[in-house]
Amino acid sequence: MRDAIAAVQMSAEGWSPQRVMAWAFETFGNKVAISSAFGAEGMVLIDMASRVRKEFRLFTIDTEFLFPETYSLMDQIERKYEIKIERVLSLLSPEEQERVHGSGLWTRDPDRCCNLRKVEPLRRKLSELDAWITSIRRDQTSFRKSAGKIEWDAKFGLVKVNPIADWTSKQVWRYLHEHGVPYNSLHDQNYPSIGCTHCTRATRPGEDPRAGRWPGAAKTECGLHVIEPLTPFPKADA
Ligand code: SF4
Image: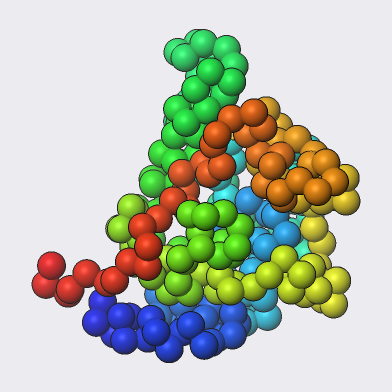
């Protein structure tokens, strides 16, 4: 399997997002799922997937600190696409986290908070899959600029599929408008990138689209998509 996947890795760079997604569904069946936090890019993938395949798996890491607008969009997605979102929670409720780690962990140690509420739940979810589909784009952060459309995710030990890795933000919004896809209403209130309530603010004119994430901290990623430059597939007998 790994050799077969490695063989398509280069060709996939020229494929459309729909073809990349169709390949993932055909190759991995029920062992592949879309991961989404329901940003604009994620909404493109969800809509595309619904046109490629009637039934598909979709999961989200629910930190329990999301905006009401995000929860409302999740309900809307379930109704429109007739799917059940797999919601993955932290092992600690917000109250338990406060008891164990003190209040406002996100202000004192955001990396630890993200590990508890995002990275560990993601690792747990990915352990039941052979591949995951994400909506990352290369021009979003420096960590993402080398993302391939199909790559080996050495951090989590499965195939990672990034169908719109080479898209621009303009293409994303064109797709959403042309196809009448619902999106998070916070995007219309200067929130280009939306995460937890504690760590997201609206951006000001001229700021980087991700400037509203972890404002005041050097942090730009929660750790889910921090990858090494294009990772070759390990040999089948490795
Ligand atoms: S984004 Fe903020 S609140 Fe959410 S898990 Fe990370 S540090 Fe915690």
